[in-house]
Length: 609
Image (cartoon, rainbow, N blue to C red):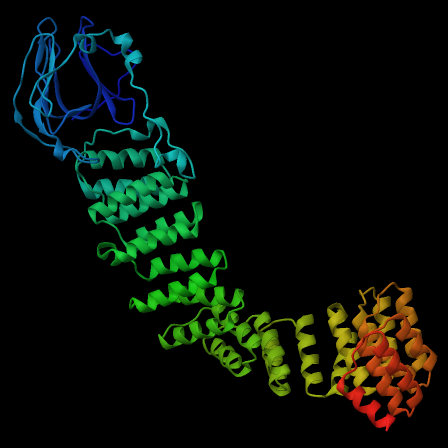
């Protein structure tokens, strides 16, 4: 077997074959005197057995497939001889129904037809068509002038597919000295792993040309190589051939679907998946790995709806998810805020006897915290420790926070002790979660003591949230002086003090009946260009009412007319037996179009009667 490309200057006694178009192949035979024969503009695949001698050159055709434009099912070419150079060839009768991509048609016996200076072709109707000597005996140098124009690009052309474009030399076919499919498949695997794209494609096409079939491992390795090098178009052609030969697997589908989702869109991958799902011949290849590929593709776009749909389809078709399946589902659902679905996926995973990975467990703990299911979160936390794993600092903080909100202070501190035993260093979130646990259980004094311990021993973790928790404890305990001191420390340490911090200090002064201090904090707040909000004015109005500073109350109401402020002022004046002023504010409130609440109306009716 010998197949060669046509060089620019052909040697004596040579046969040259060149592909110059989509399926146009040129075959030239040359003798010593420069006379040669040239066949052009035929779509063809040549399989020639050559026997070359030193004194004469003869070409014997044992299997030649030639298909001229407009020809039909049967094709017959001529036998000719040039006595001067001793060059001859012989062709065979071919059934062109066997002619298909990656397949060599087989000859049905020799039946030469000879006519001098002519090449005779038998079309479908059985008549002989003639190819003139202009096409047969032209000079060697005029070959380039007779090259057929490349066909126009089609819809499925490589230019329409994202990725790298094909090179002109990608259609090469080599002579195979070894015909062992196993050895050639191993060669494909080796070339694919080395990313030798041209070489592995040439080897694959040569095997297909000779009727050899690479094994499944080799085909999948070739797909991976092509997709790594952005050759989606070639990969799709290989995949189509694999489906035709039924040498496809779930891994093959997984590779192609992932590439389509990446290069085109998830919708395009979904269309291909649904087509494979509808066909019985391909549905058997859609295993859990293929479903994982689709779930991961939708997860990249946070499309939890399609991810859930794939999950339900997997269940419906009787497949059992893998650890990867549930890890993907849990992470996607938690990231999308679908905590209930994440917990459902986790429960199904446990029922199937699968052990969740560390990432899945931490995501589930976070979902339990958001859903307020601290019991389940604690159970998951304990299962992590039973498996010999150490929960992360983030999981410990989340569980402490969840236990604190549920009022389970003792359990929260036990988790804190375990966290230290794991070697984790408590951060600001850890301390704030413990302070929040004590505050939620109304242990304000203990929380303030813990705050002081943090402030002395762990100054580096102090932040705005920890200080605000300390200010909240001061408000509950009525420690207005401690609150003012903490506010001063926050400003001194350069923390970005928010309006919430000033509101907490003003509320502490309100509880301690210190309107003058509250007014000073408010004025200091305004000087620092921090805009007060409604809560600021509510605390000031209550402080001024208890301090009988009625003019300041009216000044606030005139500068900031608000229904909640009027309701608070009227209710406070009624409680202080200032009926006349309360009635005045009530009339003013109705006049400017503000609506009193139920408590304000009830108090006014009581005072009017």
